Length: 198
Image (cartoon, helix red, strand yellow):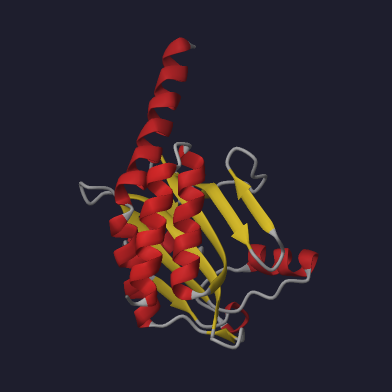
């Protein structure tokens, strides 16, 4: 059994045992991190096609393990003044519905990583490589984005994400689409219910 197959099977077992949907999302992020040997991962959901909402934030080096609603990062606007906020890599991944590979954010001029750099400065962390992968539901509608940070080689040294990483995570996201779709659907139902109550 290959390493990726073993991870797929382990995650499937964990998901079947976990009943809390937010914890299931964290398991999905951990699985994507394990597949790519990434040090950190974030999962965003798309709210009403306007905002990317932080659902899970994990960072092994900094020992960060946060799940909504206990995440204090502000949501990311997909559009600003009617214009696509495409300078944000997670937004552009959602808009293009494509995976995006960044070798080193400090040598990347196509996207705005000011927030990530500020986080690095505050924590002493150093973000290098980034992989963003869009998440789709069964109707092929985009419902979120997974972002992975700092892939590592077998010696624990930072490396760039490659096409194999991208393909593995895309396949993994497809395999876990039911969990991700369920979470997004339930959140939307809660919002609708609360708006009706008001």
